[in-house]
Image (tube, rainbow, N blue to C red; front, side, top):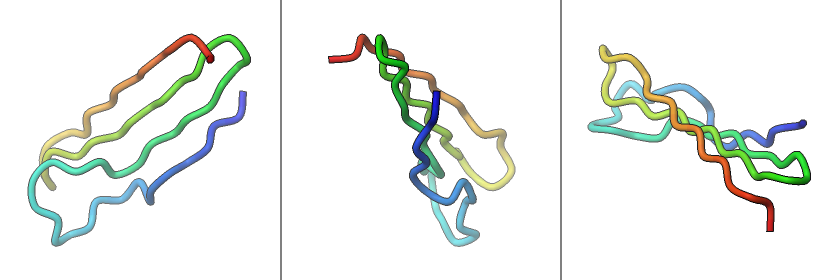
Length: 56
């Protein structure tokens, strides 16, 4: 499965608060997958969210 990338996957140094730094999306024919990387701030670990939905 090939994933499309949105965003730079880098947190801008002047960003304030929680931001989405990049997302990947794709489909395998049966399901759509979205993988989202969120950065709470410069010194905290990134959060990763995986969303899987039936393909419509």
